[in-house]
Length: 276
Image (cartoon, rainbow, N blue to C red; front, side, top):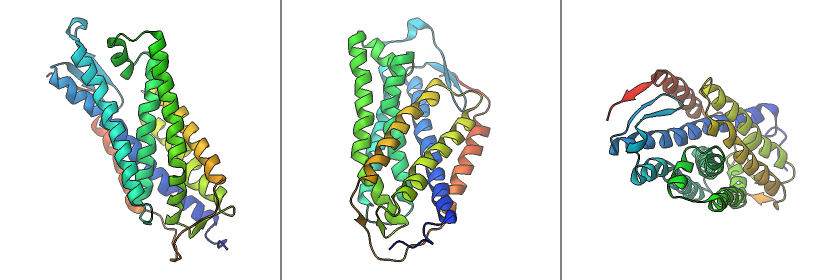
């Protein structure tokens, strides 16, 4: 039997807060990995830019853009983010039987990274931004662009199908088993509420300059969360080790997330110009 004490309101919000903090850290890591990859690769082609906490402006004559510069500047970031997503998923799988809360960060890092890439493809093609510049300079026609958008959509579905069971095993951080008695508690506290809360915090962070990608990429992540929640609820009972579990707040996650939100916003509040 699962102790009712473990399913208390207090423990629910402890798990939520831990997961929200991990979500925020992972999202900012993914966003700025892409952000700074654009900045530094622009320097490789001596393209002058300016940037702040949410956007990058290019001070480049149209004639100065080349196939190579477009491919490198707009392709490197998504590639690095995709590799980060795969590596974090591998690291998470390697720690599947451990109970350290770093697993929660690795889980959200893989989810945010893979969604950033696949949703970014769809959003970019629809609004002709970011990675879409790469496809346009590859002279893809409308049918080929549609195929790329479908690739992004199926990437979201595959991510959800592949990662759902792995998410279920993160329950061993807090519980000795996962069954019909605590499925709803776990799904809401580890996935759904942290996703909503984390998304709200990130949107507030980017206000008043929230970009198109940060406006719509939540749709893809919401789809992943919904599919994973449904699949997890249909799993057979999962049994973990018999060690006594303690549900405690992860203060390092809290401190790091607050530090990043405040520091990044202050440091990059004013536009920074780089004349390469």
